[in-house]
Length: 144
Image (cartoon, rainbow, N blue to C red; front, side):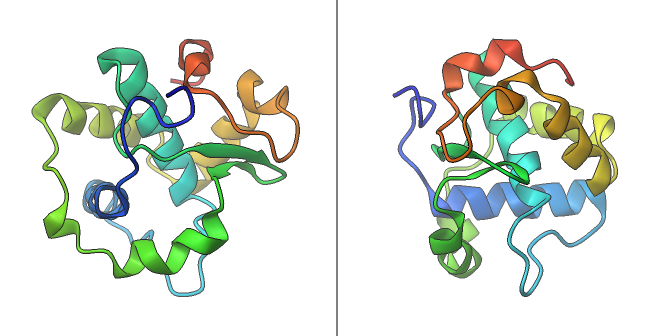
């Protein structure tokens, strides 16, 4: 649907993509005690770009507009299950999906860059705090 990007949510795939971002960035994103402040922005761009280009999100995650930018909806409840998920059980990434992740990393090689870019996005700025961000807004991304 419009809040899952035409895919059922997969915690295993979220972890797989997080690990792929870590590999591409050369840094750890799944940190102990972390609330996915930066990881969520990378995931948001990945899901929305994939939806825009392929008609389907990468993870099926829904995203909410919170004070610190776009974030996985109900992220507090998802942090531990995502960290415990088996990324080997996830549907493998296609070549096109990997290209999308590489494009995001090339644009935002530093965590602060993806954070700041997400905060400049009109679709986040105009959303009510706590509201879900629909995938139909993917064409409105301006930072990538």
